[in-house]
Amino acid sequence: MSELQDLAALIRAETPLLVIETPDESRVLDLFRQSLMHVWRALYRWSVTEGLRRIDMDREDESTIAPDLSATLRDIQAASQRGIYLLLDATPYLGYASYQRAMRDIIQRRDCQPHVIVMVGTKVELPEALEPFAVRFSLRLPDANALLKLVKEEAAGYTRENGGRRVEVDVEAVRQIVRNLQGLSLTDARRIARHLIWRDGALGQDDLPELARLKFELLNKSGHLHYEYDTARFADVGGAQRLKRWVEQRQPAFVQDPPPAGLQPPKGMLLLGVQGCGKSLLAKAVAGGFGVPLVRLDFGTLYDKYQGETEKNLRAALASTEQLAPCVLWIDEIEKALAADGGESDGGLSRRVLGYLLTWMAERTARVFLVATANQVLQLPAELLRKGRFDEIFFVDLPDAATRADIFALHLDRRRLAREHIDLSALAAAADGYSGAEIEQVIVSALYAAHAAGSALDTHLLMQAIHDTRPLSVVMAEQMQALRAWALPRTVPAG
Image 1: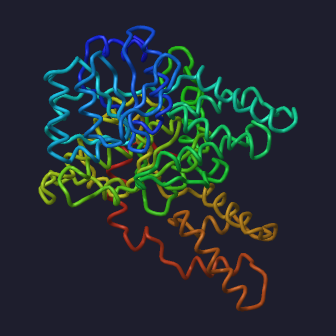
Image 2: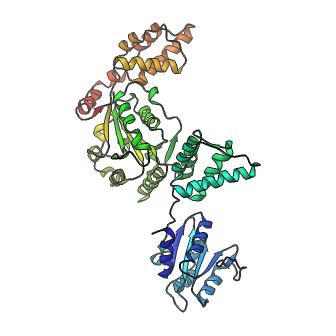
Image 3: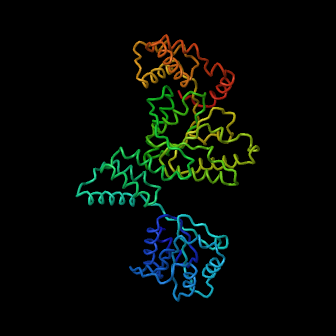
């Protein structure tokens, strides 16, 4: 059934109390006006600024009742014919017992017609005495056809207001813009489409990052998500060839809607590995490889001292992420957020959070690719590692000699340092056991030494920095050997 048919059925069933939560009041009014073609009722609108007005039959009468809600409820109860009454932002006044009693009399048809009362507001929290009678009706989000029509309307508006100048349109970009606007209300989608058109009079590929940023800012009201603007390209990551190939093979299935025949969009990966070996960089590179936005979930901000609020925060954050789809969701150091001790230390909170996260991972339909990173595998709950939770578990080990040479070259190029006279092979051999982060710090230390000596960076200074550094593979040798012993037979090497 369509949204209009669902609403008409509720009116025809004489549902006494409807609740609609939305900031888009004009859409609610239009929808109820359209419903009168299926089931006729007198239609009224009330607000504290205008009082009660009749708005059906292509007319809008002057207010006949004072803005006072008490007088309005008395008038509704005394009305001689059935009506639909849209009460806009009325819930703050229902804290009074007399108003609640009047509402219950109307809802329970005490000496009155079978009216339909509709509470409309951005957030409608009913008193406990009224909640059992309420039926909550959710407006459906616009589909692709409605969004395309909206974009065309905004483009036509731009042309009218700019002396006939037409909007420059990239057809493929418009298709992607419409796809990325899905999940938003018409009001929000129109605001973003107008912004994209008016900033340069064009709709093209360069509008897609701006659209992603605007959509994120609109949806991330809780503040638990962080938009990562700098999503690394795979070319910026040394090594990890097997992981790169894995992402490239699945990119069409993830971004195409619908995906190629017989394929399903990939769901996610877990990156285990040694600290400093580029797991965070790889998470960003996965988003760059897919060509979609990257959002990071900050688990630390989810936790709340009040019962049930942490789970509510997680639900809200994941729901916002689904509205940003297609995207990559990154949870960094997930072992610190989910306890593997049975949740006894926090009263079971972490177990409830884990349970909801696992359910979401299994049942979500939105194209949200989850990338979780972890350093301490033994601290991860066994349920998270079960086959099927992630499409693949990759182990990011210390780089081999060829990868270390690539990492030296990448960091030198990033700093625009000449490397023609630097022996990358010798440096790579000397830096055996060094992580990517430690190689970067070797270059930083050598640069300081070169600046102090007033000389250019050379192989000798880099070698000296290597010899003066004790990598984590030496400092934490036992722990790293234990991690490797666990991971190598159980995971797929990223390189």
